[in-house]
Image (spheres, rainbow, N blue to C red):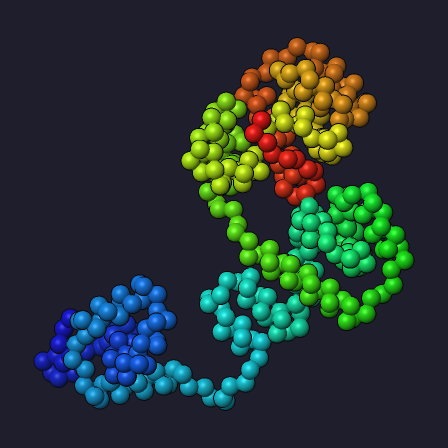
Length: 336
């Protein structure tokens, strides 16, 4: 780096990194160490390089640097705490979701955040969360949810639990604010515990999506290889896989839910070239009128490409997987 003064004796302009380095070198070792410990590796490398190449800096120039820092820290009307200042302080320091939770607590809005998360949670996860709650508390939770979400959640519960909570909802009186806060705090603890569980890696999700579109033999071959090399991850991958022929493993009730929104044309195309037992399983899941129409169409010979049939089957499998992950239908992944 050039000398501190040029031929005319003027000071060389310092970069931001050089100004920081100059300040660190000018302060005591103890204070400098406290600051450097807050730097990440890349920042430490920048400071170290600047320290090794720093030009000579006069005391006057060093005082100017300190004065510049003081001016940047100056505020005209002093400081007063506020949630806005807390939000500004947390920005870029902690993950956005964590910052939102902290600020919501400060604003006294953490309860709203809890109910918003419950509304967005898959019904199956909500059922699991409420499983060990007192029936009265669970009834209060369901009563405060959107009616469709409450219905979807009840639908996944056992018959006994479903009846019990429905009876309590029928006779439910408005809970006190204190009771609501207790329930919210309890749910908040569970949500925080769930958020600390390790999440599935992006690579698991991407690989599962790829395998769902592979030929069955090839996909099974890959799964066997993964089970040998990464046994801890095979379960996570299988949970994100579903093939058209696995429709036979769904309950009759779930098959009806699956095929209800799927166009008849797609179902007919997917059933061409399908095995008889699979075909019967699907046809038994639609209305009697739809079944008659589909059987008539399937009796008519049509020239369709294997690719078209496979794409229709994969489309239905993708729909089933979406419903499984949303908790709308249930499926236990196996090695078969």
